[in-house]
Image (cartoon, rainbow, N blue to C red; front, top):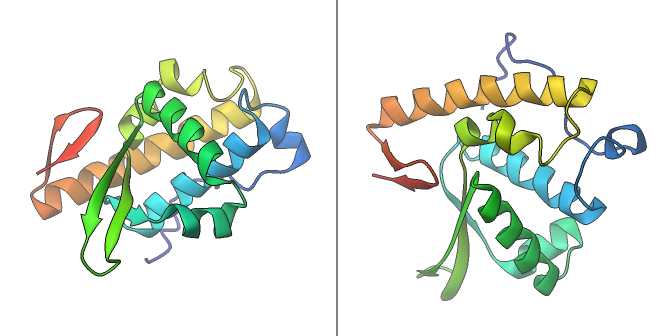
Length: 152
């Protein structure tokens, strides 16, 4: 993916100073950052990962992954479905992060403490990626029928 010089600074990559402004547990922050980075890397499209591979990359065990995913689905910005995957010869979890919903102050204030610089930077970051995601949907002819669900 080509780096856009107009893109805002990335407020990801957890450090102690940023961690203080998250309203999530540390492993939830790691998983949150992982989801955002993967969504951008996959061109804002739905992507799939096995729980074993997620655990290898994040060091978050399977049962904890399920709890974190369920919480993010409740926030409304994440869709997660287990689907059959022929090449993987089994079932894998498919993820989709909706940046328009993530950029919503109602959602973001449950993740990052409002009024902080991190909150402001993340709001700018998610708004930028919401526009980029919308462009991708328009260019590929994909429509968003349900705000919490990525559909064609």
